[in-house]
Amino acid sequence: MIRVENVVKTFTVRTRAGRFRREKTEVRAVDGIDFTVRGGEVVGYIGPNGAGKSTTIKMLTGILVPSSGRLRVAGLDPARERTRLARRIGVVFGQRTTLWWDLPLRDSYALMRRMYRVPRDRYRENLDRCVELLDLADLLDRPVRQLSLGQRMRGDIAAALLHDPRVLYLDEPTIGLDVVSKARVRSFLRAVNTEQGTTVLLTTHDMTDIEQLCSRVMVIDHGRLVHDGDLRGLRLGGHSERTLVVDLERELPPIRLEGARTLRVEGPRQWLAFPATASAAPLVAEIAARFPLVDLSIREPAIEDVIARMYADRAVG
Ligand SMILES: Nc1ncnc2c1ncn2[C@@H]1O[C@H](COP(=O)(O)OP(=O)(O)OP(=O)(O)O)[C@@H](O)[C@H]1O
Image 1: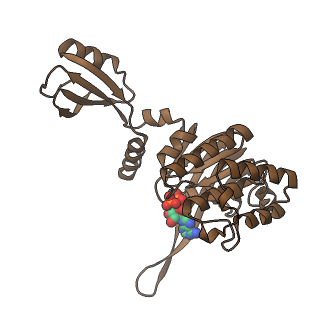
Image 2: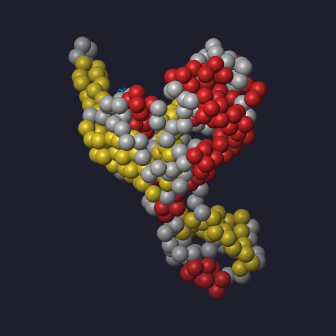
Image 3: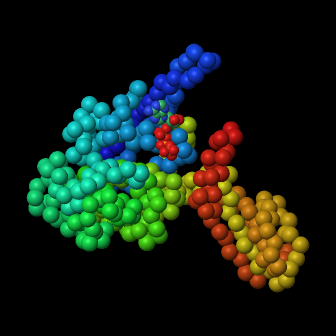
């Protein structure tokens, strides 16, 4: 559904060099990326600020033309066939709205139906479904400017789906939403994906979005893809660690073991970190043999910590 081959996007920026002189410098926002997304996949596209995510999405919608490389989305070349592509994709930018500010939601949707030439029955069906699942019934007659952020976002997501797009790009779809609205948006997106087979590319800084929605995650940094795989792979990669939580019969000095480091001691409980790629079995066996063990559990690294560590490592490297 999406194919990106060795795509580069550079911007020329003018910077001040001395009092009167200006110099041209080149920013490589996207620096040679390759990936393929199959129909029906939900893929997270994450990276630190300025990594090149929005630039990629803009190229995939045809708003920006790549400096070099090849792109195909739903069988089309985005930049050359932008109008045709618009009927096959839906876009939600969490920070901006695609709705008309002064019009009631209902009228924005009617205008979109005409723009995308959606058959009346299909439109009715899609709208009814969105209204039900996104709880929009009481909002349809209110102008967009009167809606809260969460209400507006739900309205925007519905707008992006009325024309049955094959691909949905979501840029921070849950930013600024409360926990209940976030949960509603996520469960709606899951339903759209499973019932309609819509392919989703999701950009977010919210790792819970990624954990709850994405089977695969791509990480971009300084314009290059640095990870493409499942979340488990991301947890295992780099220097991430798992934690062994050990309950002893009584308070003891910190446990010292090869291949683990003690993070914390609190009364009879101790926390030991060990590499996520290593097996816990030998550590557990050694603790059980040498210490008065009462209970033990293993904690996976929080995905936020893995990502934070990954970004930090790359910034230093
Ligand atoms: N129109 C432009 N002109 C010049 N430089 C640009 C332009 N658009 C983006 N850039 C630069 O390209 C790089 C990538 O920007 P991009 O907006 O794609 O990042 P991002 O990953 O979406 O970041 P964020 O998480 O902050 O939204 C940044 O260094 C940015 O300053």
